[in-house]
Amino acid sequence: LDRGWAQPASLNLYHAAAGPTHQANISIIRPPDSVGYFDQSSLSREAVVKRQSKVVEEFIPMITVDSIIPDHVPIIVVKIDVQGHEYGVLQGMTKILGRAKGYPLHVFYEEQEFSQKA
Image (tube, rainbow, N blue to C red; front, side, top):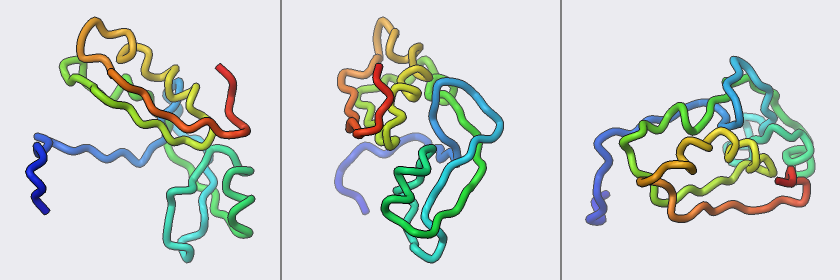
């Protein structure tokens, strides 16, 4: 579908969680496959359990945003939606946030009632 938007030279998808450090395996909780959507995965069991009676525990790596965005790639907007773990994501992107140029002009996030306080 071409809407006249610039097409990226490459697109990389990561089956990983963004956080403050690299970890080989962390536990996430998500709805079961029968539900058919995974936008409610979370490091916090409480974030998923209150919506679903059955959940699945899955183990994935944790990576930092700094480790996957090359220095030469400018960032304009960052949208963080991680069910209350925004501070950890920000800790893993201090290099990007500290850039002299090509840094994000806007960082959007949604504060959850159980968020970690910065």
